[in-house]
Picture 1 (cartoon, one colour):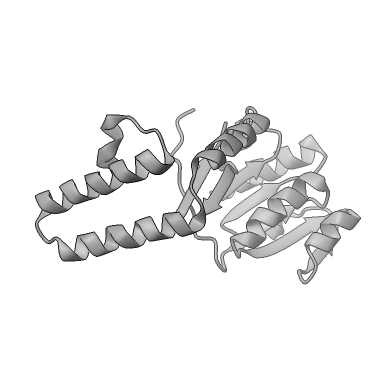
Picture 2 (cartoon, rainbow, N blue to C red):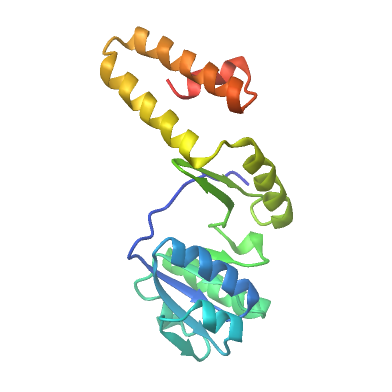
Length: 198
């Protein structure tokens, strides 16, 4: 499977979440953090899900194809694979991005295990093949990143260098020196990776 890693701005974009159990709850948390305009449909909502969804309108009923009207993304997170598959088929027919939990073949959108610290956001995905591995890799990366203050200071210093050094060659050399210092303090990168910030 050849996929494009991409970060989406879902602020105020209509997103449909179908499901009200523990798996749907995890997706709900990510979608709320993204500030999506959520529509939530399920035949039942667990107590934990209802707590997490407080302040949102919950529709207690089965999924209907009309629920897809106007949405940009649908997450099928029910505990019934046949319902998730039917949602995926209808979403694809309409050209809507679909994430069907526990069915990577039905998905054209995948949730990643993410790490946000200051200006850095990392995402790791196995495209649904082994979500636990994504989480383990994210935790390993988390231990490599310096704290938020150090990352913000580094970014601010880079911005100042870009302003003060109009000559591209001088700026590139200064940024590479800055990166070498950052590596020495925080990371172990290969020499070829210096070009990443220039």
